[in-house]
Amino acid sequence: MSAQPMHIHPYERNWMVFSAVMLVLFATAVSVAAFGMGIQVPAPEQRVDPRIVATDPNSPWSNPGLREVSPGKYDAYILAHAIPVWEYLPKEITVPAGSSVSFYVTSSDVQHGFKIQDTNANFMVIPGQVSKLTIKFNKPGTYNYICTEYCGSGHGIMYGAIIVTP
Ligand code: CUA
Image 1 (cartoon, rainbow, N blue to C red):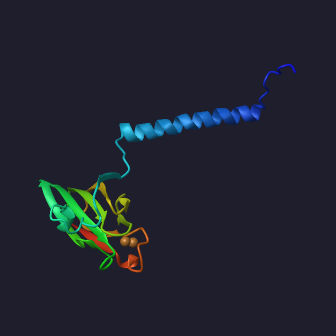
Image 2 (spheres, rainbow, N blue to C red):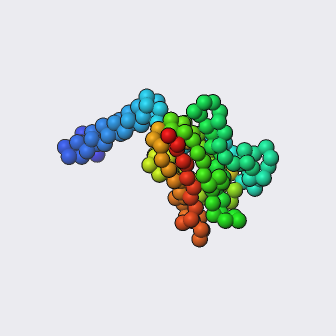
């Protein structure tokens, strides 16, 4: 058998070139977004023990709520649970307009979601893990947060509110 020079149909070659170019474009877009523009997906901030996260006195979620870390900057520790009832703790937080709030959200039982209306915050809340995202609230108003992962019969009533005062 003699070796034949490999023949590639022009259509096939064009698609191969197109695919290679697209891969380079995607890799460039992701790299620019991540390293150039600092766009990050909500990262697992830390691990916690979901069995004690709501009761351990050393756990910030044993006393969930807002902490002012510096003028205009807040940490919000939010606990999601289905037991004994479907709710977030706290149900409501109030900050002045212009505040930057870092949300630390975890669950003491099943998987929940956390979406803040009129913002791009929308992430999963996974037992054993802390989800963190920082949002700046410039416009006064009420921003509801709702559960976006089906978590049982009370899923539909699981919500809270961020009140941004002028
Ligand atoms: Cu919590 Cu759905």
